[in-house]
Image (cartoon, rainbow, N blue to C red; front, side):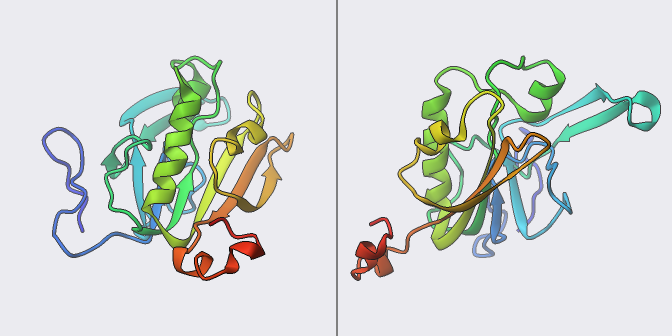
Length: 196
């Protein structure tokens, strides 16, 4: 698989039929801030934005920092261009601020929630689980500076396994899900608490 850009700036989902995909999908990668290797070939990076900004940053040499959002595939997380059951791991870190302006530092860095964002996030969860393989893992990240994580988790019928809070004020949540395996849950283990 290659990530050659087409004339419209997007990448083809598959450049050569039959080669498959890396095992990991970052469904809204932004500038890939939490990745150890921002070009990790085990992952496919998706975002609906492709842009570059110079942001003021007094801690950086020269007083500014480049923000580069350059996904492998230009797509919205509500309509991912991949087949069902494709990825072993999906990372879902959608925008989590509603009141930060789209042109401010935080808005440019993280994106902003607009319009009917609850429905958008609901569709995003559904799409992430659609492209996730059975028994695959979804890592969901949410900062509850403005909106409590409990309201966001209510947007998906899937049950989280466990989570962790991080950040100076413990407002960032990392939540882990596992996609049910229909063969296993249909075999009578639903009574053990697996969603059926």
